[in-house]
Image (cartoon, rainbow, N blue to C red):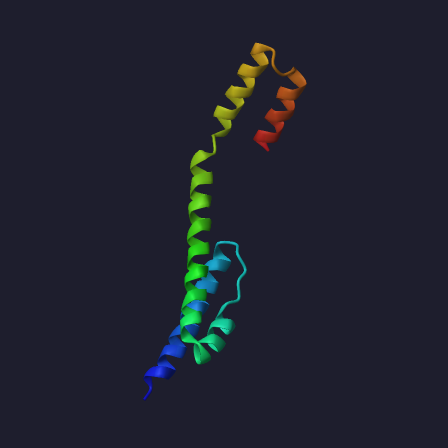
Length: 104
């Protein structure tokens, strides 16, 4: 008798948790109310919405992880610009501008 009501509650609470995780990752989503309404009438759609939001959060995490791993350190970047300066590819002014930008 209480199982249908519990499944609606579970859908709503899970959607709230996914909203909180999304907000912590920088994506403002409000799927909890939509999932609650869909959970009452069409529960399967709520599960699809929740899964879609989980996929978005996972993709954002993978992209952020890849960006952090590919970022060069400040010293490596300065060495590259110094090499370009020594080779005559950029001017001293360009090098100074880049150095100031990196060190800020």
